[in-house]
Image (cartoon, rainbow, N blue to C red; front, side):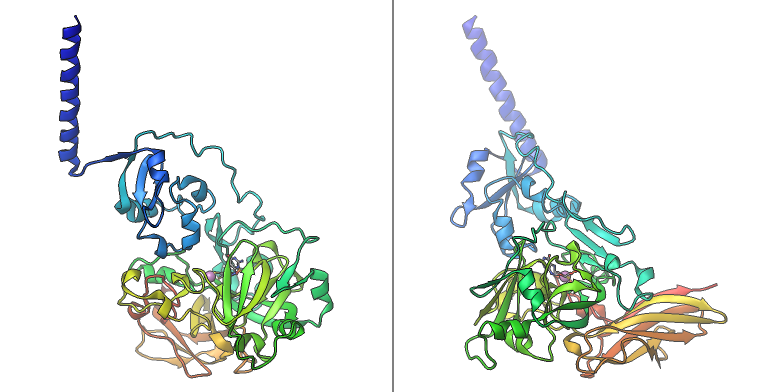
Amino acid sequence: MSRFKYILGTSSIGLSIGLFYWNKNNNNKKVNKFTYDDVSKHDNSTNGIWVTYKDNVYDITNFIENHPGGKDKILLSAGKGLEPYWNIYKQHTNNSSIIKDILTPMKIGTLSNYDPEKYKGITDPYINDPDRDTELNFHSRSPCNAETPKNQIMNNWITPNELWYIRNHHPVPDIDIKKFKLTINNNSLSLEDLKKMKCKKVISTIQCGGNRRGELNNIGKTSGTSWDYGAISTAEWRGVPLRDLLINFGITDNDNIINHVHFEGYEGVKSSIPIEKAMNNYGDVLVAYEMNGEDLPRDHGFPLRVIIPGYVGIRNIKWLKKITTSDKEVDGIWQRGISYKGLPHYIKDANDISIDKIAPIQELPVQSCIVDILPDKEKLKIKGFAWSGGGRGIIRVDISCDGGKTWNMAELKKGSEQKLNKAWAWTFWEFNTTNKKGEIICKATDSSYNTQPENSEFSWNIRGLNNNSWHRIKWNIK
Ligand SMILES: Nc1nc2c(c(=O)[nH]1)N[C@H]1C(S)=C(S)[C@@H](COP(=O)(O)O)O[C@H]1N2
Ligand SMILES: [Mo]
């Protein structure tokens, strides 16, 4: 009897070895098995960085530097499951190509002791995000990324607060106003202290560095939200000039050591600007507590945000908690890392270039977009906006209604009255044509005579930033 059992035993081992080899040949690769314990040892650069998702194990060592959300963030999951973090950063699970195109090539095996319950029952950190206008054009909800609705852009030279585009990286912080403090180097201020200081109003347009990224995705894949042209809005901000605050706390003009001013939000997003902009009396940098006559809405930075007129969206740090002066730029993905570095079109892999040698995007290039095409008796009325970084006003918008064969000048409307070197807000434009079908193109020129590039092929870059190529719309009104 016992001998019989032994024979059965060996033959079943033989069978499973046979099956294993059959599987191996069939899939053409061997599936390594690991335990949660094996994975947990790979949470450092010496052993490599491994993570799990469901029952799969991935080696992400070579990926972390290029993680669009920052190296620090992805390292939180080193040696562990991605689930608790992907529950916070839902863009991952909302986007199936992240698993297919990014994770799968890094797969090194599966978990032998997989427990589907291991990361269950974690509360959604977005539960306290504010309610939002349903008219916004949502790309994602957690974190919230939404465009100003296109049919509302030209109705409002000043964008109403509830229609402002929203670009959040994390859950909206819930800030207790009584405990709120802003620190400036080693000093701290309450909101009341700030509101007692001399204030100023500034009308400034903010545009996300990724605005119009979606068009670049038609040429080649980029990373980040696939924005159309609605990640741009305008408001009147009220607050304390940053220059006054810095002077108040002992910073002087022509300081030889300070080169940059750093800003940090409550949820850890950081950026910096050069001291020349921060201290410029005409630069209009504000520590703002009001947006269009109301307290800042929670999505837009309540209770405080910094406004850097003429600079890319990310520098306008929301939920501002800390200002620091320094000889260097701030650390982190948004300033020194790849997130806001405009690379050339011929770089297809960020590992091929030293990111730290590339300047971060600060002042934005000249931009213009066609928004409305409205039948008006025998004519068409075309409306749009133009804007440039650095306060450079719009001196001209050129329009073609036949795909670029003939051109004419648009009429510059609201916004064109701004000073040419302090035009922080956009300029609206209009153009009438009798053409009823074809391709409309617009391109703007700013006060430095910079103009928009024709081809998006050459504007393309892996992060999909700074797309300001000629804006084109095909139309056919019957
Ligand atoms: N603290 C903090 N500040 C931030 C962000 C953020 O996620 N956190 N997003 C930045 C980016 S990328 C942009 S484009 C603008 C968007 O501002 P808005 O949401 O008010 O339109 O805020 C910037 N400031
Ligand atoms: Mo942005």
